[in-house]
Length: 127
Image 1: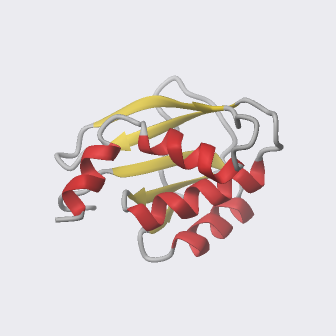
Image 2 (image 1 turned 60 degrees about the horizontal axis):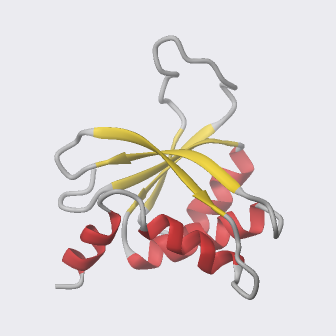
């Protein structure tokens, strides 16, 4: 799906949230509605996964979306999936809390950049 860049997958979004996120990210985002649940998994079949190609602009849009979805002072913890350029996928936790004096979008973006492989991909994409 990405060529050289990893893909961040945010699962379990309501249809309206998935559409809002995809619209704010733009061309780097795709809503996946036909992915089945993992073997042994459970969940709401009405939810969607949004796959976002990792770029600086896309991460800022995802961070703004997360900031709008979670109240200040709340510790945010989401299970996300990262698909590497070679197609391998792994799940990881995205966890952050807004520090005093820090914007919630900035806290979310910092946490997104700290995910495995994201900083390296952003550095490669600048060259």
